[in-house]
Image (cartoon, rainbow, N blue to C red):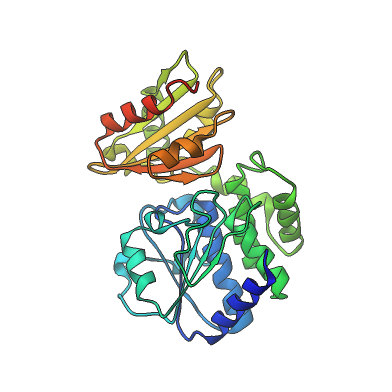
Length: 320
């Protein structure tokens, strides 16, 4: 990571009187952990209270994170202009979403910090920090903090550890040992590693029933190598824990080498999550206007649920 960019980030934070931080739409553990972790870092090292917002669905399983209660839904945040807006874990404007993009574009200065291969060269901000070789945005935030000599509190450590843990699939999807070394350092700094899984595995009765319906209606294609689960809007509203358990269950089916979860957030607005053990689903997601990691990617499809399913199945033709 370029020290020059870290120094410039430090300068921008120091100069700003008002700061906004947000992640991608429908934040996952890494997006949320990076946002909250950076907010604690700014408060602890600069004495500034940055505003934090989110857009879309925010699963309740992350409620245990310190600072979570202070996040504000984007539509409830007054559209004021900030001196500095920092986008985390989003390669481009499409992933940020329209509402957050509006605030981002209004800011006096902007920063992007992201780890995805897709959109790595998309310079959407005045300062773009998108180094190669990182498996989580929370990992980048930790490295920035360490390089800048910032104090890292237990609250920061807990948030960043959660981000790394979830985006690596519990350290199952790593290309090198850097993420594990960062996680170990965060544990030494106060992250409660033992508390992550128990909190992520908590489900409501409504949640588990909805998951059961989704899994019961899952379909298999290409000789059972591709599993596709569709989540209509009425069930989407009941899946408070998000898709974590569904990803684990479908990915664990014998013979399945790739799976897709299609969520109908709104009519004609489908979020497709793609996972695989052997196929580069990032390439598939990019063709559909999305992106992500090689073996974990996503795309937003402007079509009905049935059409989205047909589109995804066709996208895997000749690959599996």
